[in-house]
Every structure is written in structure tokens, then in C-alpha cells.
Length: 135
View 1 (cartoon, rainbow, N blue to C red):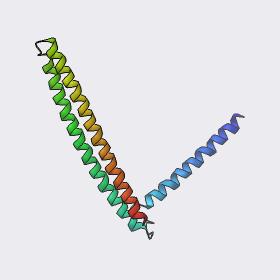
View 2 (tube, rainbow, N blue to C red; view 1 turned 120 degrees about the vertical axis):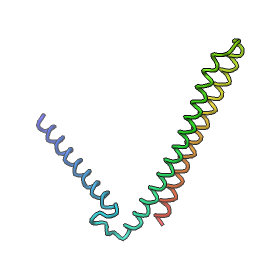
View 3 (cartoon, rainbow, N blue to C red; view 1 turned 60 degrees about the vertical axis):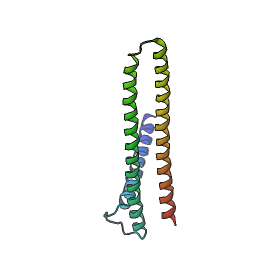
View 4 (tube, one colour; view 1 turned 90 degrees about the horizontal axis):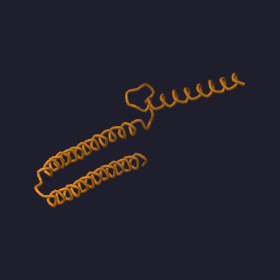
């Protein structure tokens, strides 16, 4: 019984490895400059790859901007936290805490909105790329 289980496991593993190798060979042949890339639609794939690289570059730049804004807001919030300790009365401390709390949530909302806009940008670009290349 254990031999049969072991044999079935071995065959399943071999099949999985073969499928992965075939997938990898097919994927590699789509890249420019590889042997066997003489398909009539090879130029379309190269254009798609170039546009994809540009889209990812733009996406990473936008993400870098969002992270920069988020980092700056975090530093400002930390500075305000340390200023809260300088409060003279409990009421002043309470109002500063509420103000800081509101600002933190506003900052988080702005970051999430910026991330969502970035996601929309990428989704729009991908839709544009796939529809252009499909026609």
C-alpha cells in the first residue's frame, strides 16, 4: 500500500515538473532575443512588454510619491505628539489629542485615496494595453 502511494506521489511530482518546464519554455520564447521567437505576433508581444515596463515604472514612481507624503505626515504627527506633553492644562491636552487624532485619520484617508488612485491608474493602463494588443 505504501509503495502504491509513493509511486503515485512520484508520478504526480514528475508531471508537475514537466508542466512547469513546458510553461517556462513557452514563457521564455516570448521574450525578445531568445531562439524560437520568430512568431508573427512576436512584435506585438515586444510592444506589450515595453508598455508594461513603462506602466510599472510609472506605478512605482507614484507609489514612491505616496510613501514620501505618508512619511512626511508621520514625522509631522510625531512632532505634534511630543508637543502635546508641553500642554499646560488637561483641557489643552485633550483638545490637542483630538486635533492630532483627526489629523492622523485625515492623513490615512489621503494615503489610501492616493493608493486607490494608483491602483485605478494601473488597472486603466492594463486594460488599455490588453485592448490595444487584442485588436
